Image 1 (cartoon, rainbow, N blue to C red):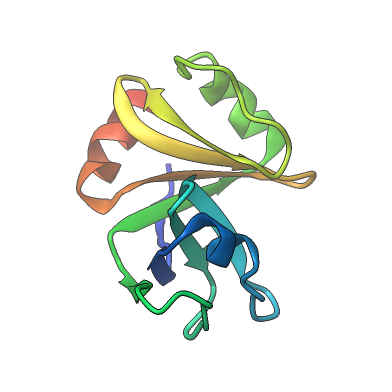
Image 2: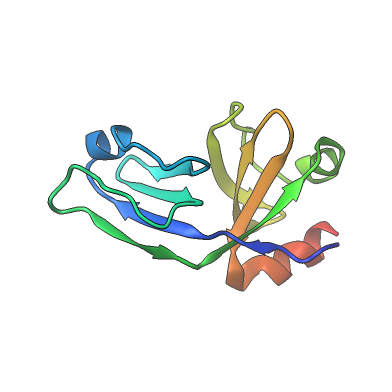
Length: 124
């Protein structure tokens, strides 16, 4: 299996309303981890209307972009309900903490960089 790619972007910790109202740069994608916590993939800068917001570069995750057929081979390792299209789902995949985002064209399989080798060995 191919090596994962680094998920570059920003980690945002702020109040939920401020994250909801964020205007993303073109090409950026918000991955909502919790109501007050998100990763904005593909963004180098971001302004949030929360004076206590924490916005820092995110370097801890990697991802694989899976075609639908590749995802079908992985799907039976997911130990939780698959999320709706465009929403972030997170939980154990092959007993490794991971995240997925399903789009019409592909599925992003996201994992902490330190666990990428473990997940890769278990899936492929």
